[in-house]
Image 1: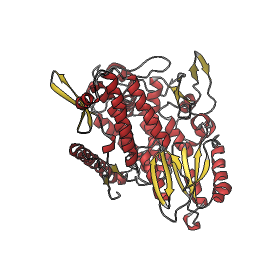
Image 2: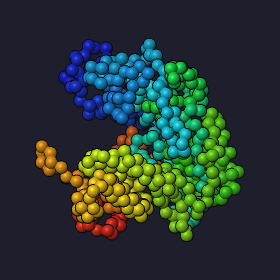
Image 3: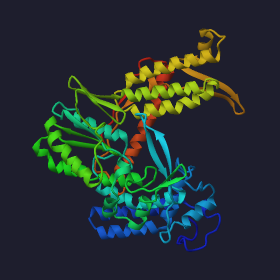
Image 4: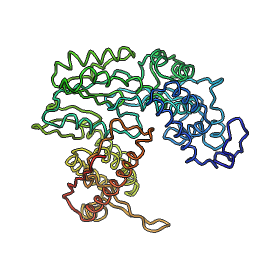
Length: 506
């Protein structure tokens, strides 16, 4: 960090200290402690693990990293009820020095609402910056333990895991001819809002005084203070971790009840509070699995949502994480769900409607991140035909936009002005020269089948360092190859872009 490596928060620090920090060294120090915690938990040395968690929560390096992560993420400029944000290095350094347990008092949460797909609104509770940094600090201390004892097939809000891993696990569990044919789609009703505080305080090894203050801080809505007697607030940095630890153990109970030798073909895949369970017949789900799940959730103050939880045959298909999983004549295919496609279309229409009067290069800069992000999420499944249809949809939206921009011009003039080599392009003069802008063609995106992460892989254990390094290198190489193929198809002006990339499992 600087010449004095043993600086602590008790010593006076220079004003420019924040700008001279070597973050690589800070991350290294914190990662060493996290590895020790994960190793102690793996060896079931619970006292040592608890002591190391306490040590990490008191570490000055961890406090610096907590403040850094809070101020450099997407919500770093979103204030709480005190309207305070840490925008300059002095504020950030003072915040790190003031992350102390003694005398710590939480402030109420700021309640906002965001729309859901079904038309309802999801409540979000935003803590103040100081509470957010304190939660991040304890999250870094608790995460190695949570990863070590977590269910193998849970993928939401966990490092080095994604939605694509959960979808690939669904494919592996259902793709064979002799695989399970019945699926229980489960959704927990108000998972974050209904967790029992007593269970959290009893079972999660963290400073109970601090956690109790977070859970019972209340929220402010319309200038009124409302108490919180249940649940963990959505919007807190540690809330997803607590939710995962509350639901961990469900897969273990199910697998012990239905071992492989019984040939019930029971599989469990969970992403956050949504999970699916497969079985060989409907009676097994109805009579055995559902009562087991309800008893597990009731102990934690939770219950299944009757509207979203249902039993489905694989030939009828089900939606999971914006994907439709279904067997067609014995062959399992995964496509983007109709709801996801329609939501993407509505978003594109809205962008065109709101930006009818802007120049073409500005429109391209607005559309490209949306199109690229949606295609990158769905390119690991059977989505080539969907990409082609959406490409046609975007083309007609562009024609309508161009006709609105140039109402007195004919279609041939519009075509030669914007459409070159099957691409929507625009160029403008800048001080640095001519700037060329080209719309991202979703129809040219190649399909790249995702390789699922190992179920027991733990990023905090040293024996998996080589595995995650090879996996990250493979993803980088695959992204480069995808870019090269996309560029090749674009330059060749080919309509046949059905390119599929495959990789061996790591």
